[in-house]
Figure 1 (spheres, rainbow over the protein chains, first blue to last red):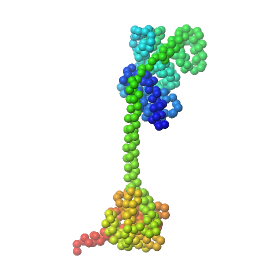
Figure 2 (cartoon, chains in turn blue, cyan):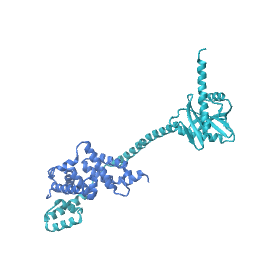
Figure 3 (spheres, chains in turn red, blue):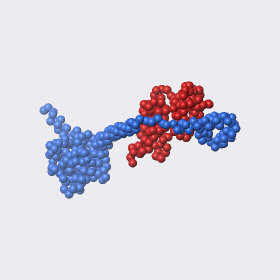
Figure 4 (cartoon, helix red, strand yellow):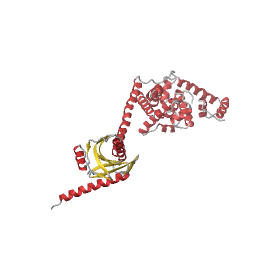
Length: 163
Length: 247
């Protein structure tokens, strides 16, 4: 198998999952697609440095996060800064919080500051471990726990549950 | 233990070290608020895990594949251009390196003298005649000596070695032999002095505006021919100057 074929077989099956997270990062389809395309391009160029048999999904997410961070840096604003804000909900809880289904939850997720949203998405949607998330986001494990905690707490508030 | 809400989150995710997990489990037995947090976070986690993911447009996979393909093509060019430049530079370096020319001449010396009969195209013992013949066949000759150190001019031809054509003039005397080459084009200076190639001594010198190579198994024969070449050239210069003098 050529390098290209290995890359296509190993990396491309994660396209849907990466897109899901990219969409939740950027909150729009156009930016999410650009983000995913750039992620695969960088992964392809760096594929020689990837150790076969190790966790390619976590590796792809690390690149996804870097591409996103670089885009923020270019726009000279960092998503990290919002972490300094208080724990209060950034927007009022949606009116139809009790509507059930996934819509209210999706909306509440979108309302979270990005650092908390990503920590929750990586843990609760993508089911990464704290260690993997720490590696992807390039932060200590303690920070991962803190972000997930605050993210879930805000989500519960947004959904009208008890904080 | 007091309530540590962040640790409760770590507990839900199975991310606490064993000792902290045990302590938290004990705390949960007596703290309804923390137990409620565990239940709420587990329920939230279950709901998040069941969320249908946003679907990419069907075109995205094709777009990504296309992007990779486009990346592959220029990446070849990125390598090809510097590689071609490096090869060209190396070829130029090799072509003009005196060491490379010396090796080619030493090889050709063995090749021609190794034949049963010398493969000369012209047979002559007259240096001036040899010079004229070379000129008629496209080589600017030096002042070809008739002989030196007991060796005599036998004849010559053009030899193709590698990617260049050398004028090759043969001298013999008993068991001794010498090749005089006229090297076309430019050969770098530097190690233009004497070089050894196997049992042979090779000398590259510039005389009379041309690059000349001398190859022989005897270093003293090479030296004698070098003197003869420069003397013949000096004599020719003097003759020209004298002829130009007003009576």
